[in-house]
Image (cartoon, rainbow, N blue to C red; front, side, top):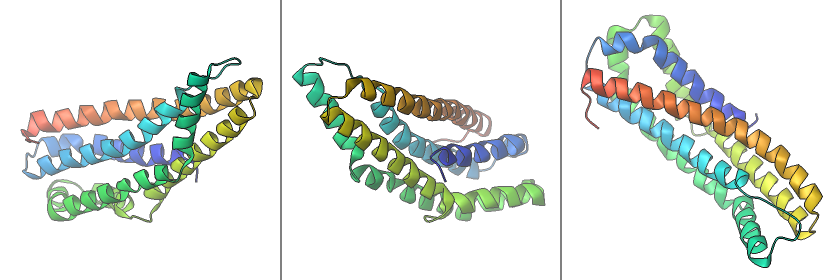
Length: 207
């Protein structure tokens, strides 16, 4: 499974919430506050990924770069290539557990009251996927971390050899892949913000 699976998993959830939001907004419930909290947890996952992708695509390399620029680029690549990146993505597991607790304690009863069985099943499947620490959703974050680390190590090795033409070519390919992921993340952030605002304003949820 590639790193784009992270994006697909979140998009599935947004599509489901879009389909049922009118029903839920017409039936205000204290659980709405907890649904807003879910949106915030999903955004926290996005933020972890976007921060590292931004660092990866923001670096520039050129022949004749001075010692300071070289050192800064090398330090950033070293940072991205370590397993500490994967460790930071482990925080997603905590977010997943929090989301499942919110679903089981508050949201499930709300959904059962106002959604049809098909919609309930779709949301139950979504929350089950998000919750599972070893499920595809979190493994996709791990894979994204591995991909970023691999790209950073490759770029660092080329930088060490001072093969600047090769370095620039490789960085262009890396940036194209990373930019595609970042664009998807940014669009979903906008969707999350819209859904969050609707639930806050129309159900008077207070977070």
